[in-house]
Length: 180
Image (tube, rainbow, N blue to C red; front, side, top):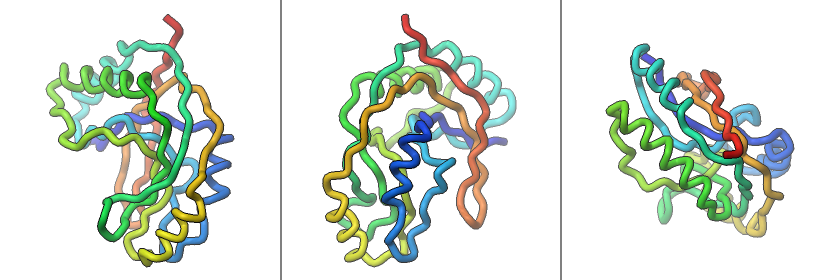
């Protein structure tokens, strides 16, 4: 069995910009730069046969490269002790369309749709033991956070192994968005 998810990787330039703000919260577990990504869809545990079918199905997804702009910070869950610090993004019809195509592919393979509404974000840190006041201060200090747009020209299939120190992600496949 493999634990899988579909994601968009970030360019190194964007990851380096995120590294500039990834400090200053006590007891926060910062996501390593090489693991920063935007999850399009968490799939969960699949067997080897479904894994191969999934890889093939994702190859059939087409679409054009599109711009994406990271903008704003926040935390989950809302109105409770924060557990995840995230970077948001400006609305993107193309991103939502890519997510819809991925969902369609998974649906064809009998993978149930996610119950949660898609809320595109990049997890920066896990903050379960970080004092609320410190998280709030961090969000206020970075209230105007905004990065230059970048072009999304591909997406990826990853496997994930849970460890005591957090999840380890392994690249399984890459899918290019080509100009139609």
